Image (cartoon, rainbow, N blue to C red; front, side, top):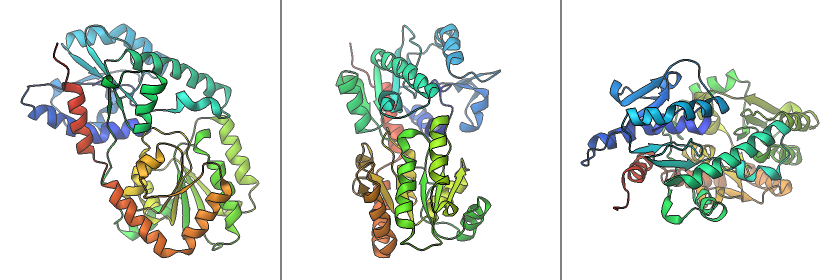
Length: 379
């Protein structure tokens, strides 16, 4: 399992939750399969204690982007031969081709395929264009591809024309640290530390153009005058696109309710747990996702969720969120008003979210991934 490309966000969460479970399945395998990890020494905290022989740590400076690609082309094939590997699993959609082994990739980032509809900065556009070329080439040449949702599955089969027999659909799991129950005093301390006081609406995730954070701000503007004046809008997350950062900054500065909009940036996992657990409503307006962790985390936390109608959100929520038509800011503001005025509705939607979250399991994800890595047609 090649882990050097797992550097942030959902990729890190994937490793943290899956490594031990997948290792245990390989250890128990009656077919005597073995699992080895190739990772950078800076990633050790993501791994449980494992036998030294099971991990090969790359030391020195952490390589990212094109530097990692150059390193792969110089070293990966040699390492694979030395470790006598039969299957190379990269939990990402880009990997250098290595002859003589079966390669399994994962489509987990839809942004490079759909970014052209959004006003990115030139740097971000170029980055996504390169990722699109690299992803398309690597995914088409892979022996098997894991799709993390039905939406990703459709992209592989319809857009990239990858044969259906090469694709396995495997959802991410749910991190049980995100839950409906918890110590209220701990939550209040976490929220107080970032300036959150009283009741609030929450929107979260990487601040990129497809997240449509500006729609959430405009919807809040439209309904803020008719709801409790103490209710805040909390925006959690950060982004790398300078143009979009300016868009969000101007949207907040020009808001007549800017004193009630709080941008907390990237926060700790513990703080996110408290934000989910204590928000009145969690708004997910994103238009590009593969299998969004924020959706699963919100459901696991028992949030009342308002989500856009863009795939794969209806697939992930399956009726456990209130839905608005993407970019319909008036429709979103109406949903916010309805939620805040109807406590019984919030209780019912919270129950639905908690029930739906049970469909997502890291144990199930590990079992299906084990099968995807070990079950191959007989020649």
